[in-house]
Length: 290
Image (cartoon, rainbow, N blue to C red; front, side):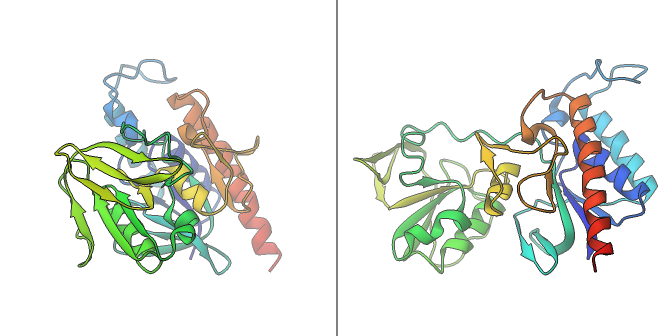
């Protein structure tokens, strides 16, 4: 069991890992990629750069720095975070890891797909969290919108609850192996329909599928999704934190773009450092109390 697990290997996560490791605590960084920063062509407004670097180059420098300090970095997609004995359990496709505290630093929340009716039926059949809302659809037919390992994870959460679970890939070829009995619809979705609540989806070929609930799991799990499942306050997909980057859940911290504000490397690095110091203090007090 580690002292702290950081979810996200961008500027906020890597910055936090440096402080935690130097404080003598055990830390893992788990992240699939460098997020939106990897797509930045040139970074010129960050202190200390002798010349402009691409976002990808800057990320690699940070990761190298962390590894040289002894930080363990795991290149995996985080699918779920749950409570465990004396802390949290972080799940990836092939393994689970435990820690006393977790710091979310996965960047800004992904955008929901632009499908007619999706926003209209949010809270009235459209959900972004199977763990949170699956209970309300027990014995009913539901669908998961997505095609990846994250979608597969949500399907598995719903199978013991719902009477039927379908997958809608919205024109994307699935890259996850969905269980037998789960029907996969690959057609593009033209709209969601229903009267007062969601009743189903209509496809571009004119066919329709009826269901009671639709769970959005496009791409990877965003920080807001993971925080929401633990009961953390999330407003407009931004994780609510105090001045010390603490959420309302003891031992759960967030830093960087996932908290909103100015989405700059300098801000992410600073928030990562502040969150790390708070998490270090939390873990040390927890150890003393034992």
